[in-house]
Image 1: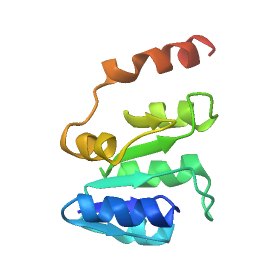
Image 2: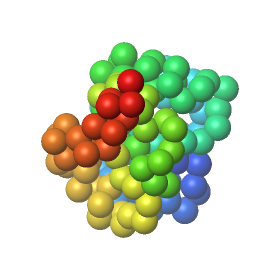
Image 3: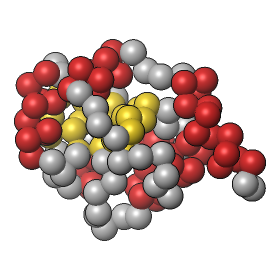
Length: 122
């Protein structure tokens, strides 16, 4: 099951049509209670949890995350990488970009250029 949690109504509908076995969700608690989810497609939308805590809970359930970010300068990028979220799309993207990620996950080497500056600052 692919959960779509983007807070963008049009994007949610379009992704739901293109991705088999997907469901649009609107509440973070639903994501955390879902028992069959394998992938979460999400943005940095505000909810009752802070980003790091929410993603930690999601990743603790072994749910793979595809994260849609404005750019590689968002402060949450460091937390995402530390939680093993490697499927990150920055800026403009197509539905095809996301559906390809559902089928073929990125590897650490694909995002390592973003991790190095963050790690070297420690």
